[in-house]
Image (cartoon, rainbow, N blue to C red; front, top):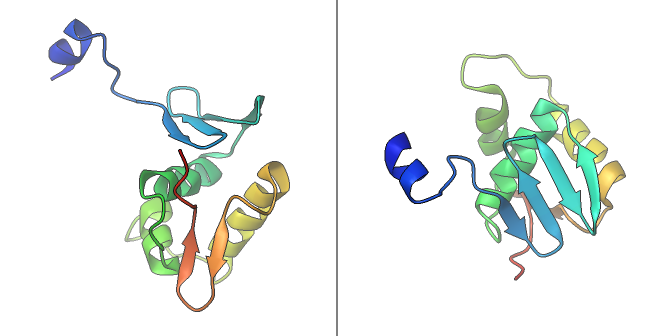
Length: 109
């Protein structure tokens, strides 16, 4: 698989793009409106989970499973804390709360 990716000039970690957001898995950075920001590993995992499925609502349980795994105990407000810290870095408009269901990022070109 890696040999095929090398031949095609591909990358095992493609850049995820949604509007003005560019998530770079190789460096664990996010570029937003021309500014490059460093995210913690859990902030990065949360943003990556949301950007892999733009327009889809992910519940707290979905996000906990993707960020922490199945066997790890998670504090009750861990996801909210991560979303709060991402919103401080990127602004409040990126991650949208769908009351009673979860969070999402809008599908943008």
